[in-house]
Length: 162
Image (cartoon, rainbow, N blue to C red; front, side, top):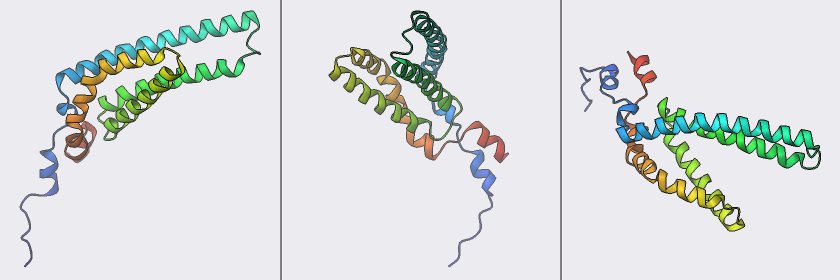
């Protein structure tokens, strides 16, 4: 037997979809605002640090001796800021892959925390404290992940279907 056609077209179904930002609890939105402020602070602080560090190395003439480590440190600093911006922006812009990207960042932070702790850099302790602070954040992401990826749509997708 053949199915009878529905009286509702495809636009009726997409009109009922929930926006991804509406899935985010208020506490998660507060986390995003705090992360955005922290990210702005990090951009300013890292730019100042890079300026002072490069000024010191060029004035003392040590840039030639450890130039590779200097540039690697600057690259790591810039990439860290880019990852922080991408983490915040991807959630706020409601991109479908945003939560999976956050999980990848968490795995990277965990691995770097273990490596730093084992090598004795002391940075692992900082990452451990950050993990405790971020535990509620990742818990909230875990609870909305399936609906975020499968059921909800971004604001841009809603505008395109109208």
